[in-house]
Image (tube, rainbow, N blue to C red; front, top):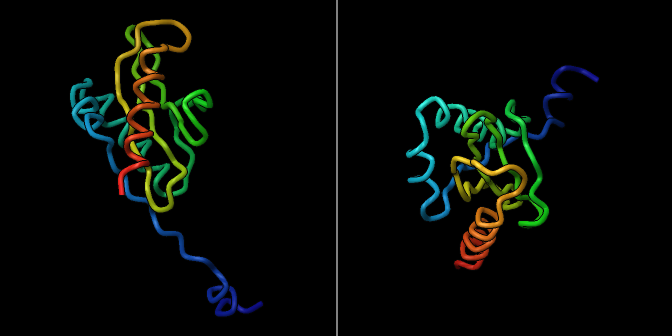
Length: 121
């Protein structure tokens, strides 16, 4: 196959847009600046079809496609996004995390925000 033929058959990747559920952008901006930068860098990687460099957990209990980016420490920090909408990465929640294991309050808020976001016209 010639170089020109190969170029014709390639599919061009179009980066996804990063959007925020109401309240999530304000939460992200309230985190320490270094963590904001790290989360946004990783969200940009995801939006461009790459794997994040931070640790992740799939939050199946919050719904398919809900993923938690993790920065561990005391306190730990979390940025939760939804990646199943065509053309969008939806940031649902960003927060310090002080409990071990899953936090029921965070899961409840994520479910509520995602449901509201997905139901809007």
